[in-house]
Amino acid sequence: MTPSAFSFLLSDKRFWLFLLSGVVAVVLGFFAIPGTMAIVFVSDAGYWFELAAFILFVWALWRTFREDLAALRWATVDWASVAVVGVSGLVLLVHETFGFKIVMDEIMLLGTSMSMHFDKTVLTPIRGNDIQGAFVVLDGMMDKRPLFFPFLLSLLHDLLGYRPENAFLLNGVLTFIFLGLIHRCGVLLAGRRGGWLGVLLFAGLPLLGQNATGGGFELLNLVMILATLLLGVRFVARRDEASLAALCLAALLLGQTRYESLIYALPVAVLVLWVWAQERRSLLTWPVLIAPLLLLTYPLQHRIFELRTSAWQLESKPEFSKPFSPAYAADNLAHAESFFFARATDQPNSLTLSILGWIAVPFFLLLAAKRLRRLRDEPPAVVATVVFTLGFLGQFVLMMCYFWGKFDDPVIRRLSLPTHLWLVVSVLAVLPQFAAANFQRLLVGIAAFGALASGIPSMAAHTYTQEYLPGRETAWRRQFIAEQPRHDYLMIDNDSILWVAHQISATTIMQAQRRRDAIVFHMRNRTFSAVYVFQRYNIDPKTGAMTLRPGDDLGPAFVLEPVREERLQTLTLTRISRVKEVRAGAVSLTAPAGADPVVPKDRAEIERLRKAYLENFIKQLP
Image (cartoon, rainbow, N blue to C red; front, side, top):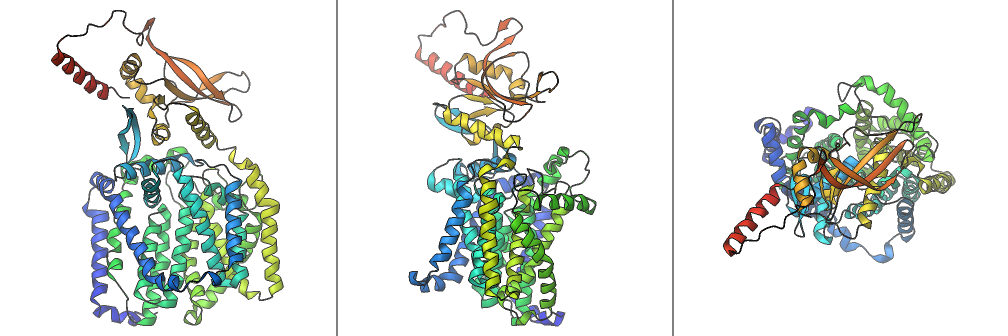
């Protein structure tokens, strides 16, 4: 494509409006709004930006697909393929326990969805209390994670009522949507057997099952990558305004799903410019014109990384000084190889998918390079897939240059899912080169056998989840919550967001130490049915001595009575204790006063004391 191929844009007023929209978004997002104000803006307006983008996306989908939906007939549905998608989805969902798997990500997303549901603000609650039967969030913070997943989850809360388990329902639905999309991708690239092959390869991937039954945004990320790719296929085929709007809005929402997913805006831009050059017209509509402004919250929210250096979590890896560097690539590639080709008992991988995928990738890259020279003669599915290789490759390179990009790490394994998608797309793109029907049937059989012989047993055993202690502790806490007949207790826990997101009064250990008098006040006044503390002990293998994890010690003033404990991992003891009393030396601060209180006879005085007590009660909430 030469510069002259785009000369028509110079006379297109809508194109200049689009550029103006982009310039305004860049100026506001990166320069005009200072850091703290940017965070406040996203907190107050982020929900409404997401709502506007989502409504426009649904409207664009309706515009481009309404004729197809009107022509749909039940008799023409491929019920065998529906069965393959349905059974594969059930396989992924039934062998894993529903729960929060990657604690910080998933609990933070749940907390953000809570504030989006109740207050239509973007805030992760960190302090909350039950006040006379109504749960009130008292304090929160702006989280760094993109907004699209908690927004969708908040819509589910709006429809079904607030429940933490709605996160699992959302991902369960997304599982079937994703498998349906990968089937469609396979059909477009390699026919009916290609659709089955793509679905079966993912059905045998335990990592997908782990995320399908969790509360994270990885499934939504895969859905949006595939949806954007398929809408790119549709745009290349139809070349109309409705399909362009759907493609651009899908890319916008994809960028709001995971931090690095904005990288897929590059292949979308290339695809759009390529079609414009072919058509010599821009096809811009008003939803596309304002799309850069709808993405404004992305750079504003990204200011968190400037304001909080801890947002990069570099303190978790003291040996690293910067988040991204090409110097990390060699080590990360070794860990990636270790993950993709490990035994199924050690990692939630699929050897079948890894072997077929990594064989297909170099052939697909060679095929893509060859077809670039005659791209206008290729089918729309091939054009879009070749261009989207830029996104898949860019995302993989970015992960390999990430300081915490080790795919065999229990916390990081999920970041390999877009690469798994690239492997499957590569297999499907190369498959038509092997036209023999028997060979294609063989690959489908191998994928089915791999899922049955390796994937399902691995998911059923899920030994790979046992090494991630925070996930097991979260499940243990949630079991404790479920078993309590009443939820009017206070939990002291450094992971207070988990309890607040389950509408349990909670505070951190540091806050409890700092505001010991408030704990004393509420224990003396029986505000809570009980006060508990969650702690983890590390066990010395030589002496058997137990020491509290750093940050878990309430101090000698708090007298504790163990209520429940369990060894969830070797050399650790996880315990929930009841706070029996708070002491100052030999004196119990929480013991009731000996003398009977004097009740005033004057009603006005009683009312004054009641209001004063209520004000003090609110101030003393931990």
